[in-house]
Length: 194
Image 1 (spheres, rainbow, N blue to C red):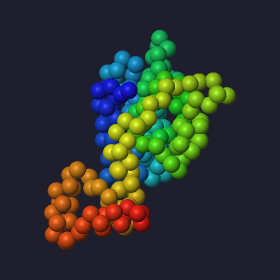
Image 2 (cartoon, one colour):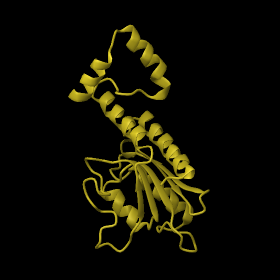
Image 3 (cartoon, rainbow, N blue to C red):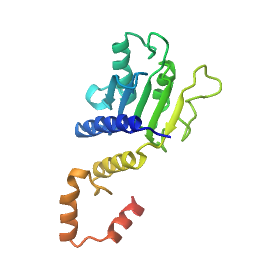
Image 4 (cartoon, rainbow, N blue to C red):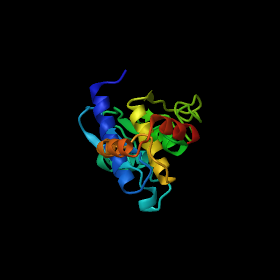
């Protein structure tokens, strides 16, 4: 269902999400790939806080860059082939509408968004039967990794311990956990109590 190229592009989107997180933004990242499967036309990460812009979601930021790259608001090549958008979280209604308007040919996203997802989780904006554009949608690529990243971000924001630390923090976390006598039961309790 997913190719090696799909995974490579989603890993680039995850890198964008991590950069957003480092800047204090919700960790969502996006990449727009040209139909040639080689050219990245746009990169995006959440910038709503940094730009004081409620529309600066990762997908929108990436589409704006791709539009400038192509000199066209329709993200199509001169021969009419569409692009692929990779994003770490299911697009919201605003982003789904923009994806359709831009004529993205293929959407690949990682984690479902149970609060605002517009690709079927909460709303069905993408490929709604009354709209005039359809995109191929593939969901679930690296979803566990992206879901953990988002969950950890919000847990830390609320002053709680992350469920699963970032890979660079894993060794320190394991040392701390073994030194403080923490147990798997404590982690399970934290997951249940959220």
